[in-house]
Amino acid sequence: MALIQFPAGAGTAGQSAFQKLREYRRRHELEWGDEKLFRTREDAATGRLVRSTRTRKERGFAIHEQRENAIADMAAVLAGGGRGSRLWVSAAERTLVEAGGQLRGKRWSTDAPKEGSADRQLLEATVFWRDQQDKNFASEWSANVKHELFEDAKALQGAEAAEVEQVVDAATPVTKEA
Image 1: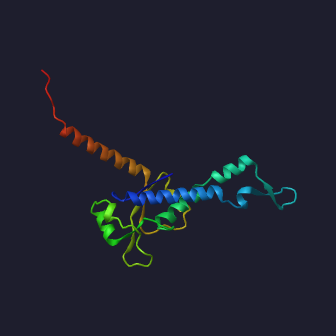
Image 2 (image 1 turned 90 degrees about the vertical axis):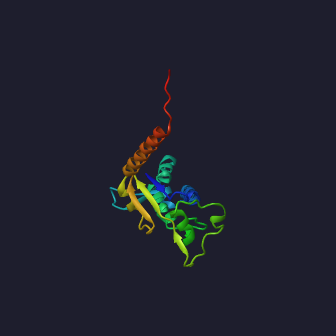
Image 3 (image 1 turned 60 degrees about the vertical axis):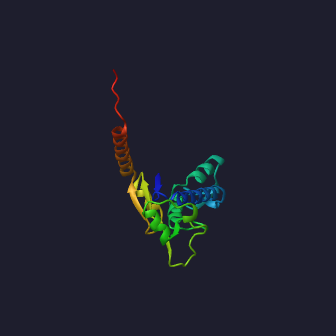
């Protein structure tokens, strides 16, 4: 469906986002309303809407069909929603990440910047989509999120792998056998 990428060195923010997405998925599985328990259809004879109970198998399919929910949850998490989100960083931490540093240890503040702080910013995130139309399931995306196609990510990864292979080949000494 999608791959979410954060800047290098912001692994803690990625772990925080992944944890939030797992929590939301679990809530969707366990907290569902009548639309999952009942199905509504129009009676052909009377033309009225009839509500009937779904079978256990149908309920399972309805509960596990979470594509729309998962994409809306991605938008909420990447917008910094939820208590304790590590996507909010101070300007100094954001500068550190952009310079290629790691957000950990003493450099990573123990608390997220306080809400309403002028110093508070969202980390950049890139979402690579398998289907570009999936991003439309979310009503809105925050300004820190960029959208790309997954094929572009695979091509970029292949180019980086070829570049690393060339460096390794150049660094490997050639020995002559006698």
